[in-house]
Structures are given as C-alpha cells and as structure tokens.
Image (cartoon, rainbow, N blue to C red; front, side, top):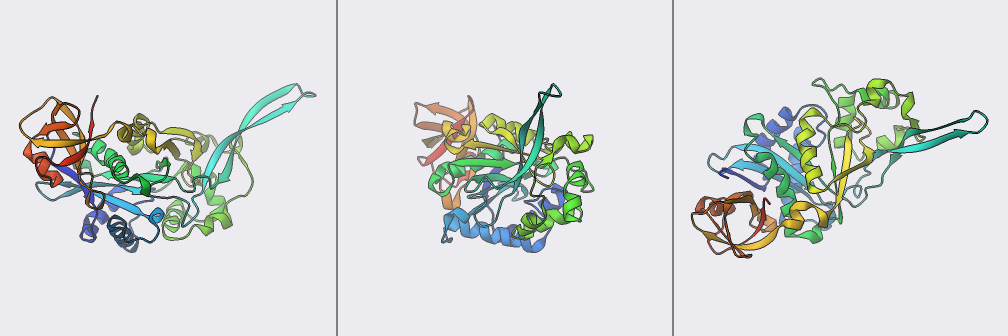
Length: 340
C-alpha cells in the first residue's frame, strides 16, 4: 500500500490550509466554519492540547492534518474532542416512540416524537473529517478516520469511555435544509447558516433559550422534513460506513439543526483500537500485509498507511519510506493495525 500521506498534529502555520478546507467543505459542516477567528482559535487549542498545556485534559481538542509527506501539501483533516457537553451544552433531539391507544375508538398506534436532550456529557467526539477532492481515494479516507482511534489508543486516559460521531444532515449547496425549515426556522427566526455559525461561536445558551421545550410530533412535520430525519449528507455516506465498520451504532438521536444522525460506541470496542497492537518495526523490503501504523507518541503523533510482513507477533518488516513518514528508526516501537 504505497501512499505518501501522513497524519500529524495541526500547527498554527496550517491556518491557510485549514481555511481552504473550511471553504471547500460547504454549508452545514459546523466543525469547519469559514470564520478566521474560530479557525485560528481551534489551531491554538489543538496545539495546547497536544502539548499537554491544558489544566483540564477533558477540554482537549485534537486536530490532525493529512499531509503529503513528499510535497508538504495538506489534503485533509480529522479531529477528536476529548469531552462533549462539558464546557458548553451539546443539544440533540432523541426520537422516541409514543404509544397512542383508545379502547372506545378501537385504535392503537405508535407515533415518533422529538425530545430535546443533552445526554452525551463526557463522551469523546470524533469528527471534522474532510478531504479535498483531489486527495481522496487510495486509502486516504481510512487513514484520516482511523488515525483518530490510534491517537486515543496512545493515551486512553485523556478520553471518555464512550465515543460519538455527529454526521452532517441533508443540506444543499446554498445552506437549505428541510429539517431546519420545518422546525428551527420557526423558533430561531434566522437562516440555517446563521444559526450554524452562532452555534460554532457561542456557548449555545441561545439554543436552550429558543428551542421548544415540549415534544414535537414527527407526523406533524411536512414529508420532506420527515424523510431526512437520521439521514446523512451524501458526502458523509462513506464516513458513516466507516463508523459502522468500527462498531458505531445509530440510536435514534439527531442533530437539532439539520436532523443528521449521531452514532456512538464504547471506546474499548472500537475496531481499530481493539485490534491494534504494539510491534517493533524493522526496515526491509517486504509486502503481503497492509494496514495503518502510528509512532504511538501522543504529543507528536504521526500516522500513515503501511505495507510489509509480520515476523511473529511482535515484529513487522516495512520499507524505509514508512519509517521516514513516522520519524522512526528501524527497531522502534509502533502501534499497528492490520487488515484482516
């Protein structure tokens, strides 16, 4: 599996590249707003998080950049937020069934309703996965996704026991979404894009102030809004499949703005974490097995695709180019996940 890409911690000098990613990600990608102050603050927060300069590690936000090791070009990013709902509320809708029955009318049926919740306090969140169009394919998406789990495995005490992911819902190129038009617009009296930016730049108190406090019956919504509840954006279908492959499951909780799905899994049961192991890397020409490998150095983690050959259970032979991308020497320890 020959690939020049490596995931590494974001730096302040990634600002221009990250702004480009934000601009190309499109409407509804809340974690990458086209907002210079927010982008700069996220780079600063990530640097401090990786450096261990935070008094409270549960506030850590770790942003990783996918870089072509040969050219230095940034092709994408992904991130891990150590704890959700801690520094500010993390509101969602839970879809719950309500039983309706009448003996006199001889009728019984269930109806779904949306309930505002803040139930994911302390969960670690994986997200911000975006690749530029000309950097997709060849395993790049898997690298960006799985690098987050190898980061968690390198220092598990910094992350929650449960992990969630929030996928962008159905939003068109102009920022229109049927779910927002049916619900949010009536309570917030603003466009979806304005609410999305406010959510990214505030403490989210405005959500608690303005959102309806009572159940919303799904059957009362227009068909176009009902149809997108729990559906992800077309650009996120691949990411959803990867999450499901890792063991994440949809449990009828959706984003309050676009209705996109939230999925969750116990950290210890995430496939990449569960199947990864520490090995000694040895330089050599070998092939036959492929996977993803990290240097397992939390503060300066580097993750890349790998090919080579296992020698027993604790050694793996791989070309020098892989070691170079990891900044390791032959004989160094690394964390390896292999395709089965």
